[in-house]
Image (cartoon, rainbow, N blue to C red; front, top):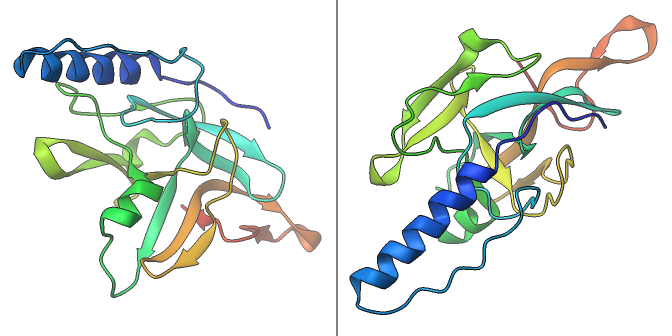
Length: 174
């Protein structure tokens, strides 16, 4: 898979800053282990939504790692769900996401999230990361669970036999 662009440095700086602030607020000393900028785990914010190529699905959205949309079930996403499916949030002070290569900027938006945060949307659907994706472009989250059907966001589907557009194994086409 070819990945276009990543933004993780601000995520780690923001997380480290929060940990230090909490440690100082309670009168303790905070020790922070900061992961390198290329680390794929622990993402909480992104400023740019880009694309990557997937052999089965076609062109998919990424913000560091693959992003997913949810077709919800009747069961609301709870704490266990939130550990597996992290919302793609904008960093504090940022009000819009940037469209990277291959992304339709007119489809990017935001919705209010907890704690005055803004969650990035594409085509009106909130975006999430899947905890079991460990590298940019991995697609392990095309699945259904009690919270609904999760699917990687496909911007341009792969071409199947006969020239038909085929979203592959569970991608959500936009």
